[in-house]
Amino acid sequence: MSTRLLIVDDHANTRELIRKFLALPGVTILECVSGEEAVACARDFKPDWVTMDVDMPGLDGFESTKALKQAYPEARVMIVTSFNEPAFRNRARSVGAIGYILKENILALRVMLESEARNIQPPLAVPGGILPSVR
Image (cartoon, rainbow, N blue to C red; front, side, top):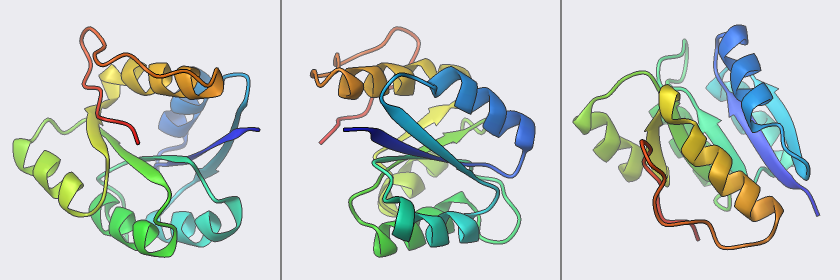
């Protein structure tokens, strides 16, 4: 069984970097350029994980997360951004994201995906990263 990852970011180079870093055996990846596209794609793709940028035209990452979770509540959304704002972390949780990590700490998400792909429990902490609880 494959883990499905949806990468949502309006910048092609950022999507490519995240895709290359998170491309693992057993992980199927789909990319979207906007929150609106992500919500539409989630219905058919049924992602297990979503990386969501914050600053995008149209629906921002918070609005997109809320809409995506309403359409597909099983998706685990991780806000992945360059903005290190405490208020953003609280807002991310309030719209249904399981976590908020800075793009430079994407290693934490890779560890979670590797663990899921190998069907093992992820570690509780990653040096230099923020690892949320996983359901």
